[in-house]
Length: 332
Image (cartoon, rainbow, N blue to C red; front, side, top):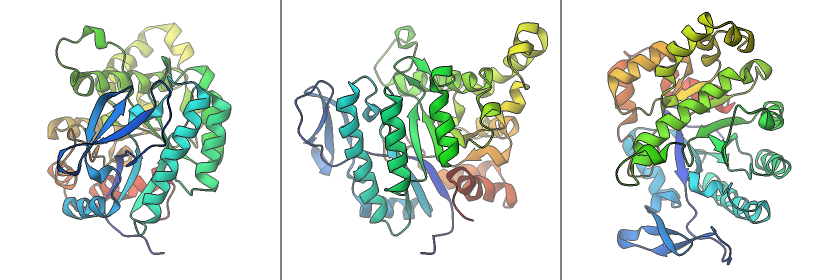
């Protein structure tokens, strides 16, 4: 099947329209809400109210058309990662989520691309589900959290996972989840997304640099959502420290700025000057379009945002489409 040409969104989310009934702590369910929306219920309490575009393919494709997007990679809402559940509960839950994602992909006429969730609290189970996602479901990659129950992704304990992702050719999208430092924020819980997420994803990206992960796995295709969070601000300090402190020079085997350009980040920063800065730090060949659709806190004009900072030409086309094809391992 010929695939639609045009901009590709690599950061958008899925919530299944329903879940199997289970009487387990943390197991999600759905309840009706106004306007065709549904409440995601966890432990009997509303976690988030979500739009029907989370599971309705026709509505999602209409939204892609409205935003000028040709294709979209879809991945689970981070709270569905369920790392904090026993693995024996998380495995069937995530199989259900991934199967629902696969059904959406199959119904989309080639416009949706699947990224799977994995039970990362059990690496053997995670690798089994990643292989299923590739071989049975035909997914292009996976989405993982910035930490696995507090273990940051640069930790040596997760190296077998990244080695397997590299070997299988699966793209890895990193999304913030349950960020550190929430006890330092004053205000409503929405500050988790506004302030907690950027700090969390920035430190996760930094851990990939300080652990030399991309040097160990040079073919790994890794992307950090939300523009890599605070990474663009942290990099100059880390670079200067690398030149200043012998211990850092010994442990970090390539300049931090060079290592950063071995992975991708999305363009979801909500600000043209910040996006220009990110382009300077990462280079236009490392930036991908992302929206965080269909949640309320999203980029409503992703193509227009890129047009604000890049003139028509090769660099703009790279950010809108070509880099996504490279990250997802899809043919041009």
